[in-house]
Image (cartoon, rainbow, N blue to C red; front, side, top):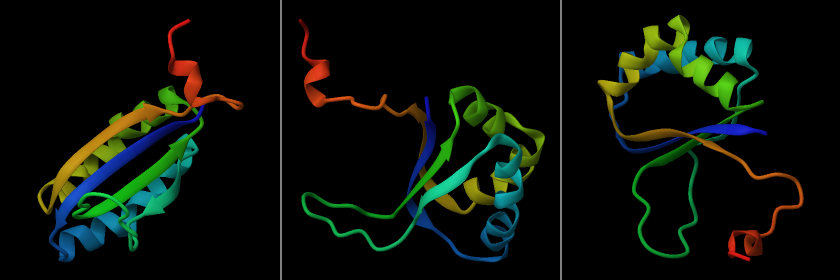
Length: 107
């Protein structure tokens, strides 16, 4: 099942370290089948407030997502982001084909 690395970065300070992070992250994704689905962009907020930026990276499964996050290549550049951005990051699995919201209702 597809798994996603998701980050909500509330603030980002652009500078040399973030530029270096952005220039190097793609090479860390390739060995694990990762690809950007969302990388910032203008959000059309329909309800509530949405400060910051959303990043979503898809991986073939949770094991590949976790292996990427724990990889030496990504760990080497992670401080470039964490020193210059405030936010939350997590891994989460998608849902299977044909999933319906009603599937969450106890039988």
